[in-house]
Image (cartoon, rainbow, N blue to C red; front, side, top):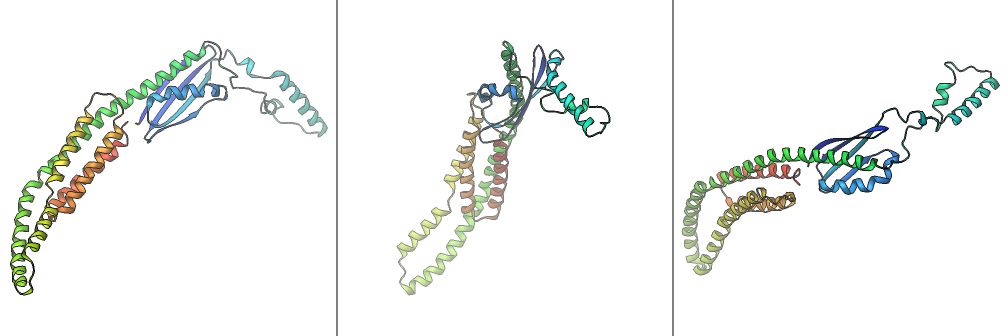
Amino acid sequence: MTGYGQGTADLPSRKLSIEIKSLNSKGLDINMKLPPWFREKELEVRNLLGRLQRGKIDIYLGSESTGEDLPSAFNKPLAHKYHTELKELSHEFREDCPGGLLPLVLRMPDVLNTSRQEIQPGEWEIIMAGFRQAIDRVEEFRSREGIAMEADLRERIQAILALLAQVLPFENERKEQVRNRLVKELERLNTVAAGTGVDPNRLEQELLFYLERMDFSEEKVRLQKHADYFLETLGSGSGGSQGKKLGFITQEMGREINTLGSKASHAGIQKLVVGMKEELEKIREQLQNVL
């Protein structure tokens, strides 16, 4: 969602410079810095900025006078009045003003009016064209960034799948370790059970329940499916907002990875799970910048 764009609007009496900066945000948060004479059009500009969908949007509108309306910026009658009163005060207090009274007069309220009172007929479309130009450039910036981001996300998903594929050798080793441990434990329990009346059927049921809890075949299959769906969504040509959808898929992937880690009971598999979590966290960070 990061982006930057500039636009200009050349009016008969001034030139407007429009800057739009976009940062990450869950919603569309628009902050405008506009001159007083532009406030009446703020709602229309906000509606136009809806194209950006999400992000913390900062708008700055600069105005540079071309000089044609400069004479009307001075309120001469008011300036003469201030000058007369200041001159009388200086005589009354018998104090001279170094540099003359003009600098003081120019700093008095409403003498110098640099703001534009209203938008003239025919100027609004020129201004809106400048805003559209700036928005277009923000979207171009986002598009370039999105291409690089898509490549990075694909690379990290493939890294997770590569780590998942490395689980299989450890899984076979883990099964053998569990089998040997259970055989020894069964031999011990059978010896104990012979003298205590333990139900062999109940013992078998408990062992089957234990083995079922340790099996993570379903988690592996679901993680693979979620990863495939992530890549499918990432490459869909719908053109709509996919950031939230990708975020939901990432949550499901995280759930399967966590469950796989909790069932692993094997140091080698745990290391692979840590690597998956690291890649997934980087994906989450990237998705904060996806529409």
